[in-house]
Each structure stands twice: as C-alpha cells, then as structure tokens.
Image 1 (cartoon, rainbow, N blue to C red):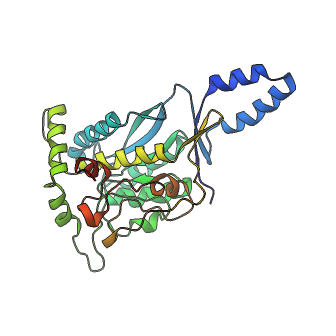
Image 2: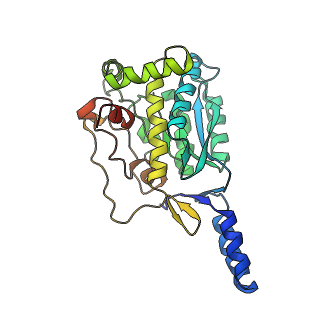
Image 3: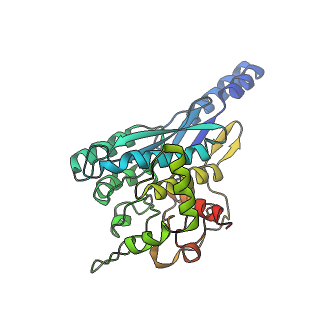
Amino acid sequence: MLSRLFVLTAIAALLALMVALPASASTAHKKRGHARMTSNSTQVVVPRGQPVQVAFAVDLTGLTSGFATSLGNAVQMAVEAHPAIRGFPIQINVVNTPCGDSTADLTAATSIVANAQNAAVLGPFCSTADAVALPLFEAADLVTISGSTTDPSLPNYGPSVFNSVAVPDGCCPYVDQFDPWYAIVVTLPSDLAWQQAYSLEFGSAPTAFADLYFDAAGLLIRNLQNISSVEGGHLHDHPRPGHRLPPQRPNGAFPLRGLGQTRAYFVLRCRSADSKRHGESISARSDRSRLEGG
C-alpha cells in the first residue's frame, strides 16, 4: 500500500519559479505542481500560512464526557511544547465521539475522514468508539493514536493505523493489565512534574488519562516532524530507504503499533527511538524520558 504523503507547500516559491520560467515550461510546471498541491486519498496538502490539522476524537456528551476538558488541556500543552511542524502551525479539530453511542461514533469517524486536511487522529477515548471508527480510518489510511483505549482486540479493526500509548488489557480470559501499570505511571517523578505543570497552567489537577494524551499528542507531532523533508518547497512524509525500525516493546505495551506499509507505519513507527522503552521506564513515553534524562 502506498504511504499517504503529507505535503506542506511553499506557494510563494512556486509562483516565483513559474515567473522565471518560459511560458511553455511554466505551464508544464503548473500542471505538475497542481497535482501535488491537492489533498486527496494519497496526500495531504497544506498551503503556506495554513495549519497542519489533527482530529481530536473526544467524548463531549457521552458517558465519559467529564474527562474532555482535562484531555483537551493536555493536548493543548503538547501543542504548546511543539507548536509547529517545520514552520506550519498545528490546528486541533475537536470531534465529539461519545462513548456508548455507536451511531454517533460512526458519524464522527465519517466526518473526520471526510476532511481531507486531517493528517492524523488523536483518540477516540473509548475502546467501543475506536472499534466503530477504526475500519473507516484503516480504509482511509488515516493514522490514529489513543491515550486510553485498552481493548486488546482493537488492532484487528485497524491493523495498519491503530496506535495507543496505554497498555492493553489481557485476553482471554480478561485480565486487567492497564490499571496496575497506570497506578505506577502516575507516581513517576516525570509524571508528577507534569501534573504540577498542568496545575500551574490551568489552576486544577489533571484528570486520569490526561498525561497519556499529552504524550500521545507530543509523540504524534514529533514523528510527523521527524519523517518530513523539504523538497522543492514541499514537505513530504515519505519513508527513508533503509531506515531501521525500533524493536517491539515487551508485554505488548508499545505505543507505536503500525504494522503495514502505510501512512501509520511511517508516521508513528519511523524514527521513534527517542521514546524510552517500556521495560526501562514503565511509561514508554518520550516526554517522560526527557524529564528523566533518557
């Protein structure tokens, strides 16, 4: 499967080049450039001055809507820490994806895919919503990363695009693996420092999962940056020949789970060695690694 290109276009540079070319050459260049400057099923094109868009699938009205504000604040902190991708600002598109409402979840996923400018998806919050949305994201080759889904069957719904920074539960029979893991994560010095920073910025303590969404957003943004290259005024997210993938993390607890030769593979698997491995820090999150000197 072809990787979906993520192209940040320098329109002014292209215009200047076309003016300098003869009329026939300029016309040919314009035709070639036009194909690259249109968002479609194989590429995302962001004109200069416009933002890189990321969908944030969060429960605003459902059973877990009480987490929404804190999760949104955490994503905001991640954007503040990494405010641009090669000079292009980041825009978070909030999409209501209520837990326990499969019809609404399907509508939300459809709207996310319909916006050709969405380069990736943060969330959904609930495993049930993810199970509904992932087949659509898989078909659209739209990478996702969640900070809360733990259903071990979810990779089956989006084998090439599903990612999560949360440790999945065991199956079968069911074994709660997330809660014991997360109970340790929230006591890590790096996590405690982040909780304090959150409280200072927003005036209250974060809810559960907010730290994981901060990490998910930061990890996504950094990897979009890392796999991009500027070529002829365009920024691409194509793979690097011979690039070596990071090793799989133990116990199935690795946040970069793209499996196919797709956009997910290159966005979330490529050049991800900066995140500390699960066996070393429990959290397996790059922002925690930095705070802990990893």
